[in-house]
Image 1: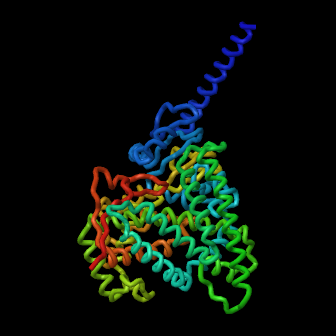
Image 2: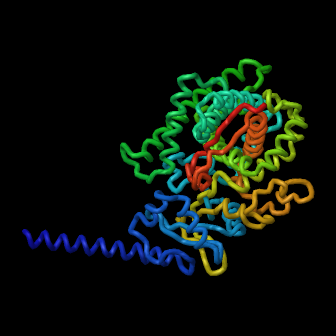
Image 3: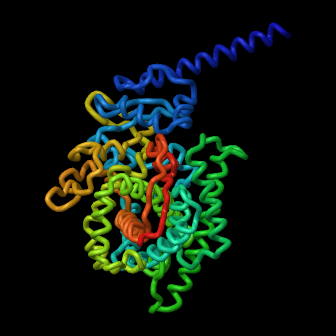
Length: 477
């Protein structure tokens, strides 16, 4: 019996070694001539350093990709490519189709977001849905949202001024953005209790995004997956309530995004529509929190830029930025402030990468074909630091009259992506950042609480200052 057990143990060890050998050889075959590690940890690959320090991990992959714009690696049983080259990134972003690439948003996104999410759509159904979505970000809709955004920003700034100083803005901005997103997207249809439950579930979702993809009870990834279902269920109720309101009278005026949606498409299925506001919430919540924090950090460290913004706001709005009232015409007059907002988004793009999966073999460049099943990471962050004049410098004037680098180097400004899945709400995102900057610089004086490494990039899951942007605030006289 003991001999038989020893034989089985030896056979199991041999099969394990054979599996590990096949895993290494498969990785090397897929890697081909690309830069990347020659040996990888079985199954986990480079997951441990990625979880331990995402900033250093992605920076190392970018350095590895410097020679030819792409590098290879292995992450939790998946072969991955990191794309640094802008041209190669465009090649991926513009080839989202069944025989090339599919956006996944997260290496294990289908488990989190579901198979029928907007980001997984192709062709005519996707184009049709995009056209329907665009109606929710029309000038009329954006004007409706603006009054909600301003009132919430103003109220939260007043609250921040009453808190003990210094204070970290990360969670404060997150809470403000969550309320703004809820009010703009689903308006009055979320009850007070629903908002609390929504915030709790959304926090679980965020934690799961940064965790190892272990779909077992008690693990953060499982909690995140279950929270998505509850969030969409909550939003479905909101859509149903909106349909009843907008269908009750032809004179009913939309007060939020789902109202605009149900008014333009009264036959929309609430369960189907609900998944899309969730996508908008994800983008608006975490991406906007990132951009607001970097805006404060960069304005504080560039006093001349701050002075020019304040002069423009005072000149254009006549104090409107302070009392919370800005007209659409005044918004159009804030040209330098908008240039600052766009430079914040270029200098610190909130979502640094957009993961795609290769649905079929694809020729990326001469001498290399992306294997089917590869997870590809086009780096929006790296592209934003290519092409532009002195790209490592924070310089809002690059987007102003005379230079127009947003046009000259348009292919490198990938903050909102490119191709068929380019961000549909980018005008809303820029408006929100401009509104926040305008109100913030008009309402408060602020000074950074400087510590070593406070401005280092931290993934959470979008990028934020390591210290959460800790500042001293006081009312501006």
